[in-house]
Amino acid sequence: MFGGKKKLNSMRVDTLIGKGTVVRGDLHFVGGLHIDGRIEGNVVADGDDDAALVLSEGGEVEGEVHAPNTMLNGSIEGDVHSAVHLELAANAKVCGDVYYNLLEMAVGAEVNGKLVHRKGGKPQLEDQRGKTVGPQLEAEEVLDS
Image 1 (cartoon, rainbow, N blue to C red):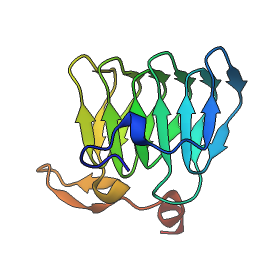
Image 2 (cartoon, rainbow, N blue to C red):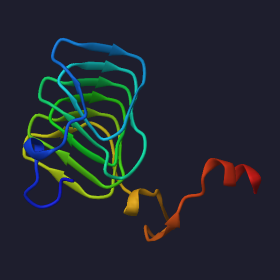
Image 3 (tube, one colour):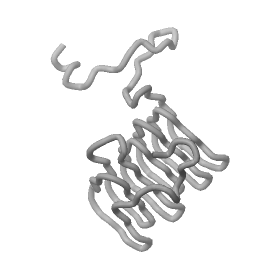
Image 4 (cartoon, rainbow, N blue to C red):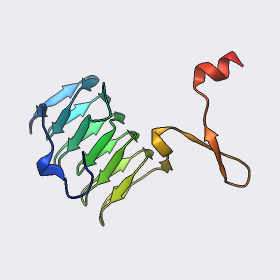
């Protein structure tokens, strides 16, 4: 969706949260979501790896973001989880940890938290020497051990 020359203007938009609009509560979406307003809750893509979120310069999210393809140019207070492609444009500001597979970051973008690479969108474990040893176990798998 964001590979090569495809950028913000060429993304399909199925849902638009307009400037001046405030949504309170979690927002689940499929397809393309473009946010110019404010979301006070988590933003979660349901469905396939083609789902995409665009947060414009004036857009704000106060909560976690979970979307496979994400283009941010606004502000987020919460963690960002992007399993396929994450683009942080020049005015992006994230106050939280960023979990990514593929990351593009423009000069001026700001992350106040950790950048955590997840190959294929899955968490990675490191041994004591810092070498990646495999995906982390899900919480249920840990509890079953």
